[in-house]
Amino acid sequence: MSIDQLIKQLETQSTITIPAGWGQGRATFGGLLASLMLSRLHATLGDLTQDRVLRSATISFIGAVAPGEVEIKAEVIRSGKSVTQASATLLQDGAVLAMLLANFGSSRPSSIDIPASIRPPEVKSPDDAMKFGYIPGLMPEFIQQVDLRWAAGALPFSGAPQADFGGWMRWKDTFPTMTRTHLLGLIDAWPPSVLPLLKGHANASTLSWNIEFLTHDLSKTSEHWWQYQVTTDYAQSGYAHAVAHIWDDEKNLVAISRQVTTVFA
Image 1 (tube, rainbow, N blue to C red):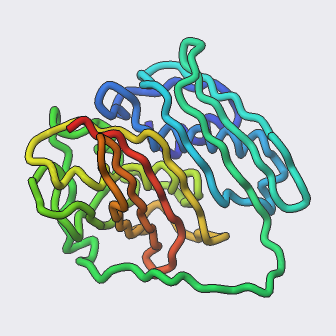
Image 2 (tube, rainbow, N blue to C red; image 1 turned 45 degrees about the horizontal axis):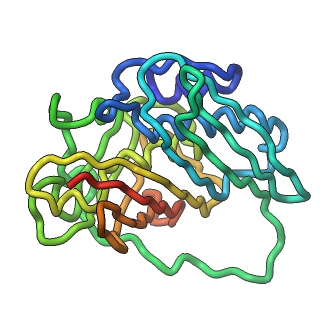
Image 3 (cartoon, rainbow, N blue to C red; image 1 turned 180 degrees about the horizontal axis):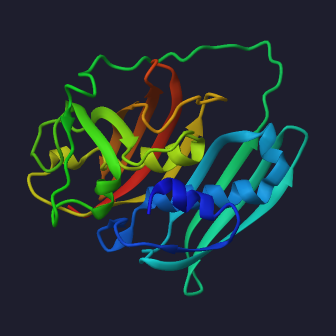
């Protein structure tokens, strides 16, 4: 079942069955869970989403979510003149396994206008970049759902002298409108930034994730490419702190992603 189909189910119901094919080790792909929680939040906000869009969100992955039925509870915490704060909680078998705290805001006149100071690096085009193929047993199942093109930096577990990498991404399934909900899950498809340093396979997982969206209107379909570049700010004692920037195919900065990752190596 495609990401678009799963997202749409949460627009009209609070429970959903996570199908096979979305695994990430012993758990379900965290990007999918984030998109599902956000979809349920949009449904809960209703008419408020007509002029208020997701500006930032913090996601915590608390426990492993298995394929099967989950429930997502969403609530509005506070709604003011231009900003709404809301939360979503994902439960399975009565246990809280993921949470999302989101801030939705409408545009308003401002005398401050500072364009993005960081530009996308010049890398190979999606057609020339290396396609990140799926290898059963070595890669998480959900990789079959995304089209990743490696354009800069070393591959995971290659024993490289430097962390960090970049490339292009999009969903393999086609749908007419690429929303923030679709993009949220896609951004999480890349492996942790420090994995190229390792010489052999090791487990790593996201502890917390903060995402900030900059543009109001994405105006893209699922066939458009998104450029991704990640940088490690700090890594020690089994935790890595990284920031990633995401641009559209017209070099507009659309999102900033910050993650704390646990590394078992």
